[in-house]
Image (cartoon, rainbow, N blue to C red; front, side):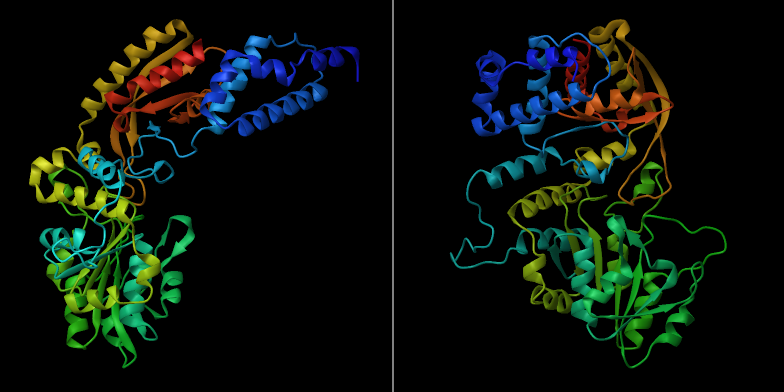
Length: 467
């Protein structure tokens, strides 16, 4: 090791000096001492390794600069990993960022529920054990017109529970064109296998007729399954059988009909010029015995799977042994109940629904918000940031409204001496993290998914970068 490297290593501060610094003492007030000391020790080890492997002769890092960097990294490493974030990606239902942001009413309900104890599963009138499903079952019955409802931890679980309850050891007939794969490589055939049902494929990838189902029914058939292609589209020479026809055939043969709607929609999105999604209410009216859908996508609630349908079948699902493993907790019920109330409140409720609000917002309104953010960041960064408002496209995300990009606007930025990937990393490492996307060596923040109330977080991140 040459003398230059030896000097650099000797110039690294000792632990005692670091711990005496005021900025580090503030860290010690916020985080356990053991974690802070361990982080500093690891950080110094990493610096020694970096210096030993460096072939460049650079000036020693000043103590104050080293502490600033160390404290910044420690705050990110030692703080809560589950933090709020600014979603500038333009993907409304971003799975990595927690999908649906909750309405203010749902946030309030969640805070009240977790404040202390809550009446999760107790009958207030009698004081005896109650039914946790009752918190949302009445609302779901009112909104969808179904006889009964039950909630589990996601829509894959809803499909699993329904199939296991209605068709374990029996045949389930499904179109080849509806054997979807959802995020994380979970496939309908795999879920069906785990449920204990026997899958029978009919039709072809692009065309399936009612006669295909008719010819496949045997004494071993328990259920006809329809799966909504929510995360992809087949166009051109196609044919699908509607749930109304399937339900009529099923009931004529003395078997069940089930509709897996995936994202689920409780309002007609075509009112606002969006593609029309099949609504839960329509499947119920069509005669489906069970309808499954997600609570955290177009409904805008917490992660959960919802099953509505005939009272006889839903009650069987509630008594299924799997229900114990798939049931949801008090926080899910609190957020879901408050979110469902928005749909009962008609247009007034929809106005305060974050997901629907972002879906239907005109592009011109997004552009004006971009201009407002540009003005704020220009004041903070001056000439350090090159800022432009550009036309872009947003997405619904999470397999909802597939292949339907929405015209939008984004704030495009470039920082002098910093490439776009590094700029994106710095935004992600801010507190709270700011997520966007990189395109053509520019970092973009799509303002369809960024509200004015979040401008201060973006401004704080930029202020820290240019400081």
